[in-house]
Length: 386
Ligand code: ADP
Ligand code: MG
Ligand code: ZN
Image 1 (cartoon, rainbow, N blue to C red):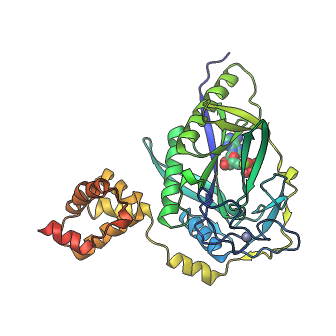
Image 2: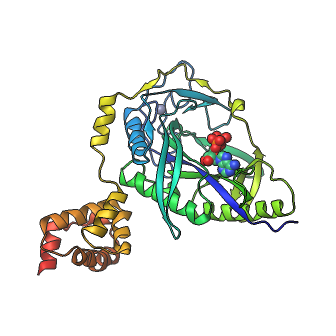
Image 3: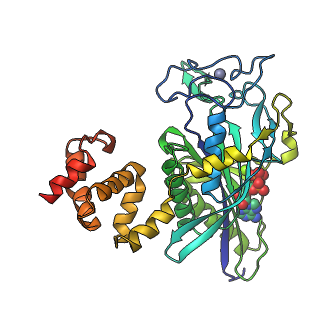
């Protein structure tokens, strides 16, 4: 038994579905898999038929570059697609096309706001890959079997991997929320967790506070909501602390999270990278991002939330709470901006007051999303002026 204090080190791997109209390596439409008829948007390529060839979706690369730039990453001129070999019934090719040794982007960071102030979380890498299909396990008439839906197979994914720079659930929450806000802001992803457009894996270890050597980690997979992620991390922090206090060793392993039982469970012991026998995808050339293209994407980037937060506080003297509400949805932010432009005589605070009280109340009462507001910024500000 010891009475040392322990601190957690947490790194996140975040998978986001990119908001493209077609899949990563074929022209099949990306459909809402919660609604679409199973296997209605599939072709030879995403069903892994022999003799087919993948073709890179340029829009997916563009969205990934936008995200990488917003995360302050270095975007590499050349990156390489690799085969990650493993068998699973929802992976018809028997491998997933991903990026491994030479990813699209590396070495970035994301600033997060916490009760302890602003923290910088380093982003190790961001790479492109394709999603797998979906299995549904059925128990019926004493039989059990699985159904496979390949509508999701080949949907473009961006995996964003952080360094283990988070130390609490609050850090993790703040990172995940800021990341989602950024991706939605840029139109990179819907970030809709209920539809699986954003999924988390948390890597967590604990070490004595007086040591700076990272402890042995566990990886918790398939965390599909902020809540699940927070609960799973809290749960594992307790277990690991208990293990270490007893003088025992944490076993490196991959865990799943059971929402209903509120606990983690062992999935398999941690596979090694060489189990995947990664090798360069022979059917795809290296991905080359020309400088001119990168520059044009950079130029077209909108002002990012952090910059806007600063400006709103300094120029408009808005309070933190109102600023955050403007940041939550870029459409709302853009509407506010348009109001400021057409009615410079109005105080910013005056506009946000009307926006968040009367206008939002009216939308709520009429069960309308913001996109269905048919009141122009000009009309709205004239109304306020009256
Ligand atoms: P893998 O690809 O096998 O999952 P990586 O080494 O690429 O492993 O790391 C994945 C994630 O695990 C990263 O987010 C990283 O920050 C985090 N990580 C690595 N080592 C530790 C550790 N000792 N404690 C907590 N997180 C860690
Ligand atoms: Mg991992
Ligand atoms: Zn297809």
